[in-house]
Length: 217
Image (cartoon, rainbow, N blue to C red):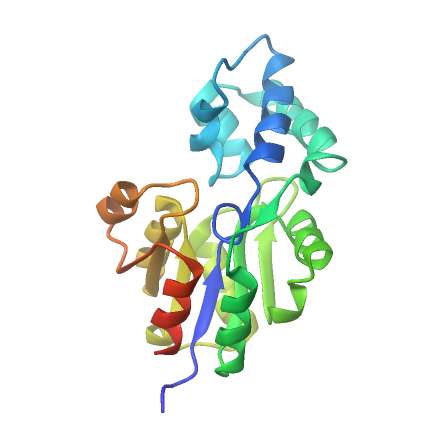
């Protein structure tokens, strides 16, 4: 009989397609500073890291400008953007099967905890999760390694060989490697197979069904 596992999921691009709301809100923050994006696909890269990191790294905002961009983003996202999402095909069936097999399920996302929890509650998926870990509104606790470690601590798992981090970006894979847990990269989100393989993902899943098979077999 397989030992019980702890499966940690990223949120954006792994459980939900949240791109529409994120990009709309992100653009709102940029436009205030006269920065305009001609093609929304250019913003695929901002989905994954924290807002503070992405506004700084990709658009050079610092100090008060950075804080204002984040404020403007959240102004729109918390009222409208947060509802502009869809659950990827097969996700609820996947969570049901993983849970039915006796495994623990956690969320490890750089999205602020208050927003992540609201999304899980509104979508009805919260019932599958034993632990939910997200960043703080001030940008702290947004390192993927810290989030994975916190989820492990809260779930009571100390056997890293039974912990799996599932995500769509290299940040998820890099965090898993650094902490010493297994990694599953998903190709249906905002990253690419090339990105995931380059970062050294142990497993690659093209669908929620693939994740179910990897965890429960």
